[in-house]
Length: 271
Image (cartoon, rainbow, N blue to C red; front, side, top):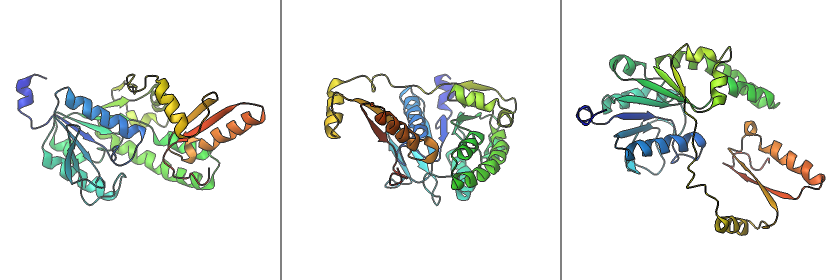
């Protein structure tokens, strides 16, 4: 896009997401926010439309990115109020050059899809309802299997909602394979997609002996023992309990190592 065409728009990219790192720390939240920051630093004018962020104003700026929240909806989750009010707030911002929906964030904006016919709607897909359904059934837990019924309903609802998008961005080869399966393939409906894998900031994750020793000292871990790390939401589907059982089995067989669980402590007491 040249500078002349940019000047005709108050902003260019509208990123729609239910949650950000200011709501909670998660892979989807971090990737979406880093994407917004990188777009902004590259000279693109970005708006992030999201649910209310506790401790922040209705509108605020962070890392150069303007964040606009939808008042009167539950923070960090999809709700009827979000589907009803988010299109209204988005329309008040005016049409961007492109709408980027993080997962299903913008899937309720059918009215804007009709009013902004020249604006591409792109969805970044981080997972599928069918994969969620299978993982809950495999968990063996009655409550999770009951929730799988809800996921089945969400699968059909998502199929209808995702029709508004012109293109899909898939964040991994696993998601691509999932969306080629018989049921999940309904979501794509022969629309174009691109696989853009989530990256890793190599500078941030460079090895540091100083950091290694500091972290081990902080948690009382021996410097000569192998350390395994599990980083995820501490939710039944993520398998932290499986990691613990595997570690126990290894210790019984003479394995010498420690396991660090890093994640939101939703069910830490059960672990």
